[in-house]
Length: 253
Length: 253
DNA sequence: CAACAGACTAAACACGCGTTCAGCCGCCCC
DNA sequence: GGGGCGGCTGAACGCGTGTTTAGTCTGTTG
Image 1 (tube, rainbow over the protein chains, first blue to last red):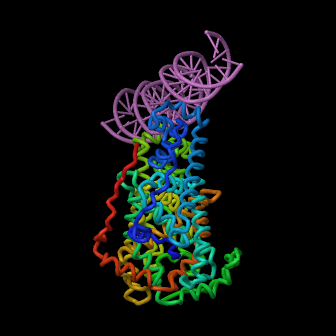
Image 2 (image 1 turned 180 degrees about the horizontal axis):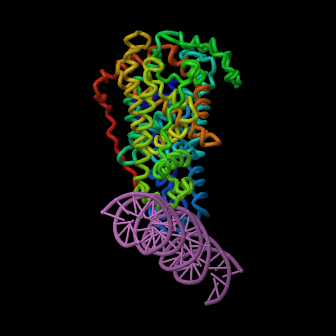
């Protein structure tokens, strides 16, 4: 069940056995340091990385000095949050492996439960800011997709591509980018539930995506053929001769 | 010539007549106020909207107080830049109308000339920040695409969709979002030429896009048919019955 | 020529930020 | 019991921010 960007929330419920697995959220830990880390992550997710140390301290019910005392500096706190979030993501991935056979529907899982809202919010913020979490998350998704798409191609349910790596990157960038853009341009009133916004987005745009994936968009092969004729073979990481541009490729209806 | 997201840079050169139209950049104006506005726009594009009034003043070779004197406040300066950029975009659109018959390749035009770098950079920043320019730009693109896609459908070169409006939105969100994500996660060393980054992105990912548009992704109609069977008709903005899930959101300390 | 107007600036103001400092408190170990 | 030690705080420091104020200079107008 390759699905890749299988986004519709309603399906999630249908696919998983009724005795729902509860979402995996990190244990409270008890220590003040842990609580600070937790509220910092949530605050960053809600307000972006410009959030002040004072606001985080206030959220945690401690003094600003204590935050610095435990983490050394705001930058180090940010780094600790990054690490914390990445670990959480790894846990969710490990936990959800083999659920929908072939895995890969990480986005589905994350959007499916409100408890993941801080995690998702944090990832989106990092994507917006070009942070390490955003980068790593994207690469995770690409690596995963690479794997199960190639499997799906072997099984004959997915078209092969002339450049699998590029296709995977394109697919992940589009879906992630579309979602990011959607919640950025039209943010949820309560920034706490980005997951709801994601599900709305999925519900609205799942049909066109499915249509595109199933039926394509163009009725003629002309543009693709022209391009293939013009450009040699891209597959193993080499660039086409760039722009020596002997391009008398003029297209015209 | 529907093309929509026709992204390949090499084509741009081929399409326009050799006696190149030079890109349309707003006249210098001469006044100090105009110069401040210009450098402010560029500074915002390069460094984001967090850029300080002092840095802008320094760029323009004037005192910070003068910036405030002319624009009232930083927010008003920001708004003036927004207006300035939107006017510029309107000019470019009007200027490029009917160039590639049917228009719509605004992105192409913008990515095609380095002189548009500040404009493009500004739009991307606004997209990142969820500003009005980003929103308006997106809606412009959607409106344009709506028009020439429907034309392309009439001409039989593009598949019809069960929900044209949703498809257009999906296509624009994906392409814009993918591009935004690409330059965010992997920003150009010299932030001055985002256009180069855009062209690189286009060159890399044009093939998979074209493949997807021409050949689709799935080899079976099963998923689409299942979905259509499950969901009635989405066209006029109504939500599917949104399954049972009474979302019990507990959590929150 | 005098007077006003507007472009422009140096200096300061008020504020929020990340961070530091000195010290208080309660716990554990000798 | 005494002494260290780590969690923790209130107050301050230094800095960068957007903005204000007072004033200078220049060109125009009566």
